[in-house]
Length: 373
Image 1: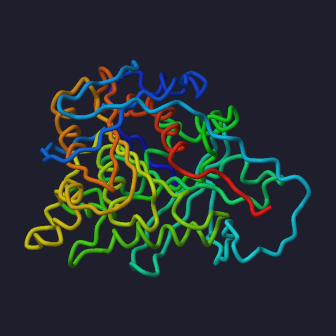
Image 2: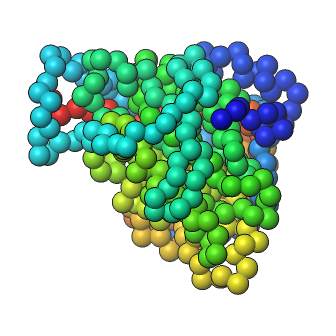
């Protein structure tokens, strides 16, 4: 597998790479500035945009919606495992040890926080074969934590994301930032899984993270084959409480949709600047299936007990309107929180500035590493 060339990766403004290659240390972690909204309402449409620079922290007041700042807190560090425990797992074991078969993982590139690996996953349930990238936090291979299971964060990129995933690139240095925050006990050390979203670069063949009739079953691949692959290869935790999703732009739509459709697998999701539409031309003639897979429809009918964070760039009024109206559609037990990035644009550079805050939110809403001893 070769690394995608520049044409695959949005570089929306001059100096983007220079700004982001200064390293994770330049991205300062500040208290989480999001607000909680749990209301009913109706949605609004928005065009799908590829990925577009400034971040200040503020609270956004949304008329007719109840806002409440979440209290700040930091995760406890993984406990020191102490002496090696017995290899026999108790019946009520929290840790799920990998059962195989082991995937053929190859190094794609190095980061300051360890390598990103890649493999082609041939999904047994979907029949889809596509690439998945994996990053393991430094703690995962620390002998002290050999009996620990780790939380899993699946990341979806913007655009077609075929043959690449921008979360593996230094434009979005989430691996370095997570390693830094975990060292500071400000975030969980997540296993990060970064799948493709489509099998072709043709937008007319977009699969919308779904099983569109007559097309490759991408929804099944994402929601069943990818989690099965993770459990087969890595130490995870039983249940859904340590499984999260995050995506930007079209990836935000995937994250929101999968969380609402599979609350048995995922507990929390972050949707960065989504439009929440299932707008592939391939849905033509399949309205019922479309409505069952469109995030803008699901949000008003979902009975999923999941938590989501939806963000919008404050520099784009249309985007703000779209996201606020989508958030307003949520009804219990689905909970959606809203964050508006002051002056933010629909740019990869602005998405990168949200990484510390979104990792903080995910850490507060997902279980961290645990062992059975």
